[in-house]
Image (tube, rainbow, N blue to C red; front, side, top):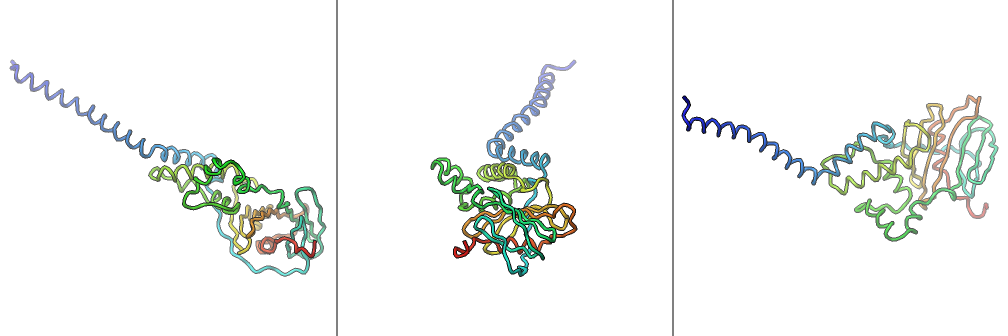
Length: 265
């Protein structure tokens, strides 16, 4: 027969054995709770970023710099909406105007659409004119690295990607990146699709290019000068034409855009 003392020892051993899983589970729960408090928002932002990248691949696309090329000389400029720019194609151009954009069609087959800079949304100006509370909320997103121009805003938004999000980042960084990713989806590319995406820096004119002219498909450009004028172009080819547009052609047009001198108006 098993003595009472031995029975108690066995029961005590079994009790201790069954208690350890419960203790381990409790410790795990505490660790999870602490991690949730410290990294919960960051983890949720990270998971959301991965989901966004899966459902909308374009959000992971960040602009690659395009090398600056010398302008290609041409004696005359296209003048639209008190601005002018040079396109280095042979032959004359026929210009059509609407209230918000103009179209220059060249005899050689190239077509350029230029949007009226005055019709472009001045996002920064609108934010500064809003209530101080609303503007402060916007400024808080860029705390430590303020944005005071429309180009700066587009640069910050277009440069963000889900790959920059980590569960271990600070709460402030997680909130900032999450907001910028939402804005990036709202801004979207200037042409549909998730094709090539580039940045342009010609000194006095900087911006972004959507598409590659080597593909033969339309290319869109959104650029800004030193005074924060916003220039939007679409470069394409007339239907049935065998003409081509090169990256050097686009560079020449974009880096030459400027307000028409007052004496020419």
